[in-house]
Length: 107
Image (cartoon, rainbow, N blue to C red; front, side, top):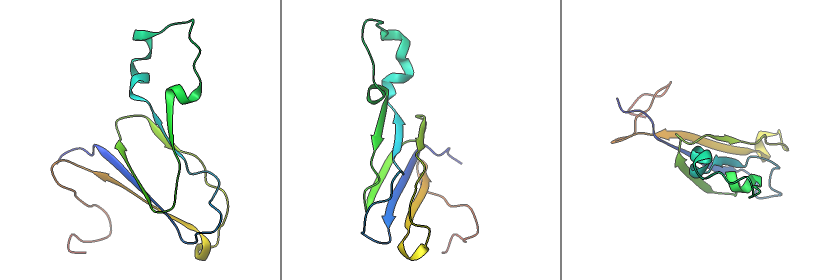
């Protein structure tokens, strides 16, 4: 079976009220993996020069190459599931998707 290569995240907020603090996806910029090749000690860097941030907006699908280092910041806020937030997280493979877990292939 092919190894998963892409990761996807769909942010769904049950309520369209105030957004939840946190939940940003941080992706290391690809050029950061080769940081020392073009290193220049006279040039300052900020976090945004090394890491891209994707805001968790309502109904946003975020798809990225999972081989890049990535993470998601802690989410604060509502704990009641009726007003909460739902995130679907999955991996895609080449050439076809597959599933593992409690659900059968037919479902």
